[in-house]
Length: 217
Ligand SMILES: [Zn+2]
Ligand SMILES: [Zn+2]
Image 1 (tube, rainbow, N blue to C red):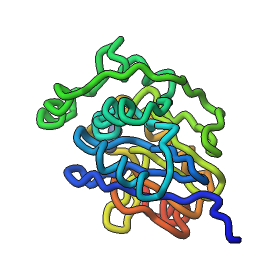
Image 2: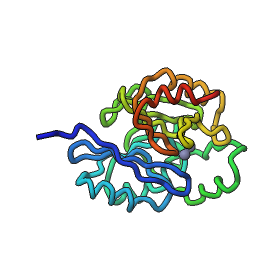
Image 3: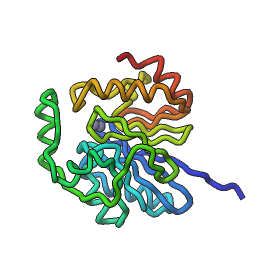
């Protein structure tokens, strides 16, 4: 019988052209980012329709368009929450969000709906989680990470797909633009066939070549 190794599903986060992802291995699922508040049911239904139980919630960074439905989803699934150590204090509310002054006030307003969650596990550069390697890429936020398995890159906000053109992280939202640029440069050295960006459509083939051609820093 044919056996599925893993499969990736996307839940579009419509207001921000963003993405939450469900990675299914057998009967187990990892959710990578949870979208804005109000998306837990869609994510849950997605996993349910795939006959998979959500055991992991892995966050690429603390921003609300990636963590907004986290608390609901954790309460409904009991899944374990993973985030890099440098973003953990913002997720749990122990430290104030280090948002740069360039963030538009409309976006800052979203943070009044932030629901703090204590992570279950702290990630560090080089960790392995759900078959993916954790790469720490500071700059967009202090604890931004990507997940990489040699074929697929879950890029968080370090790469987005804007109508077929790959862009680096959005400068106005970057905590430290210089660090962010260095991190994007580091990512452009990786080879990956598929890109699962934080915003915009996934790229299913030739993604790292496309990224190298598109991104201007
Ligand atoms: Zn972000
Ligand atoms: Zn984002």
